[in-house]
Amino acid sequence: MSIQEICRVAEHTQLGEGLYSMTLEAPGIAAAAQCGQFVHIACGAGNLLRRPISICTWQEGLVRLVYQVKGEGTKWLRTRRVGDALDVLGPLGHGFDIAALGAKPVLIGGGIGVPPMLACAQRAAGTGASPRAVLGFRSKAAVILEGDFRAVCPTFVTTDDGSYARGGFVTDVLRELAADATGVAACGPRPMLRAVAAIAGEASLPCYVSMEERMGCGIGACLVCACALKAADGETRYGHVCKDGPVFNAEEVMW
Image (cartoon, rainbow, N blue to C red):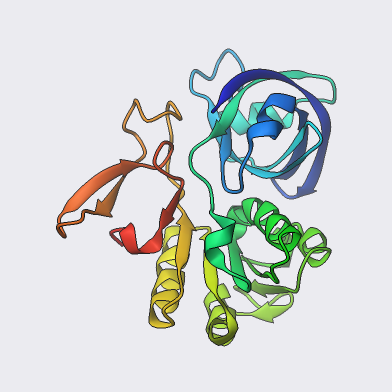
């Protein structure tokens, strides 16, 4: 159940160029949060639509968000200081079912899709599973949260241009790990998710993906984030990323 909560900024730091970590005092949202869900933040009087941001982690009444500055809303959010109040709606959407990923899940994040996978790693490890994380970035300058992941589980980092860690893509690592995996969860750009789903399918692994779409209302009323899914009869049906997702079984998605 989502709630509207006035949250105080407890921490706000820059992680890299255009990348920020913000921790909010949000006891109601933290109590209800699940891996892969998101919040919708009102970003000033001049921005009518709330901005959706994935929940990175939560604990003891605090919710951590990691976001990238892309437009006017997140530019406004970037200027918030410790102690400022934010109008936040959440947690929203359906998240990852960690138990469905089995004892050896592979958790994959690409770019700004990396943050929500951190809670997945923490929760999986907390249940006694042995997760492995694969994080993909454009370059060394874009790498975030590597230390956070390494504190929880074995972590593999790739960069598209080879400027840091392993050059290449997350799918290169997934192919190597698939034989010893029990499930796959991923969040990132659609081409990455499509490729991850294909590899998981070839290995007969359950695969869940968090879709990235533009959102308006965050509750399934405005239809902006509609996505094509497979119906039981093989025809196409449409779901809403904000309400029915953002996490879907990869087999449902019309790639």
